[in-house]
Image 1 (cartoon, rainbow, N blue to C red):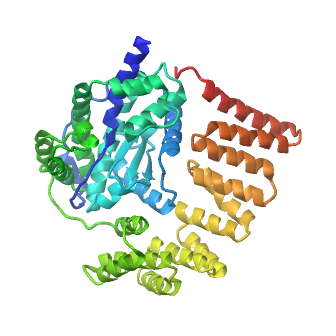
Image 2 (image 1 turned 120 degrees about the vertical axis):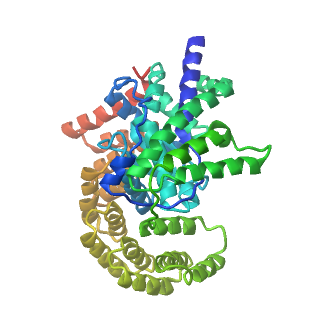
Length: 497
């Protein structure tokens, strides 16, 4: 028992380094290839002590289990436009990281606290609160670069090695609990005890060493990707200010992720090696922040509408347009569809290549009970933006709601071929197959939906219903029974290795 306790304590101490709570401010810029080459900082490869600590297959399994635990414990954003933006920004930064060919998965947590975290198999979560707190795209990118560095420097991979005596669900749930700082269903008493018994000073020291390494690597990655590396020390300055403002009541995240003056000066010195050149934020960044702001809505509809009306008359045109977009979304929430339609139609005419205006207009027509107009606009969006996952999934959802499941399945099955499935996709597939009178497939995808949310027992119940609906079809029954065995094996797995 003591040996297991020690392993768990070591494991959790390492894992505390992978959550990163922040506030930041700066601006983005781009360099030529020559400038990048001249300003590249030579960094010590501290993290790459071993490339074979765990197998790639094991890390992928743990990564999927980690995502299931995350989904079970906290609400993730189901807004595909928001998730698409996070993925696009993450890909832009990751392309210039130490592992440019690695596939990272970026997703958004529907939580207005300022937070971000890295999990196994390059899964990186960004809170909606973080996106709102970022005053520039470069600020947001600096957090992304920091989290990518945790992955490329193998901070998590080294931690996973110490979890070899844990079952897959337990290891994933424990990891999720640590990076989120919350209790997650499914964690046993031993893990909870280990968290409580951890030595705080050792945790802080270990955190500092890993955070400092992620800072060094992140600054270079941020600069190489064309963003302002100065945003990172600006962030540390804000965090330091926040610490003094809180006085005796210091938030837990500031204790586990300290921002001493040395880190501020170190990142500032590294950032100053790069030439300063301000670059305007992307309009997608402005629009996504506006959508999150409207969704959050801490005031009444009338107050929000008035505030955005005032903002739509201030600043440069791009900022005015973002405020008008937010105003249209607020009007939609207030069921003022005609006013929202007028704003979005004008925005679309002035910016024909901006996807968000077109999808918002299509959704406005859908919510105003104008299915023909809505479907026509979504079809146009699909033709104009064929690579947009958000368009395909929104279109499929509206098709389902309008009794066109066969057409919806075309886009949903296309999504299965192109992307890693999400709970939302499994949910839509289950509904679609139910509408085309294929209960076996409906139950199967409902099972995958529950499994992706970490509800394995519920998934097994759905598969048992699918087995009964298969009516002794040998091929289907064998397929379903095999999946049931896989689910049960994971529940009963004694350890990872």
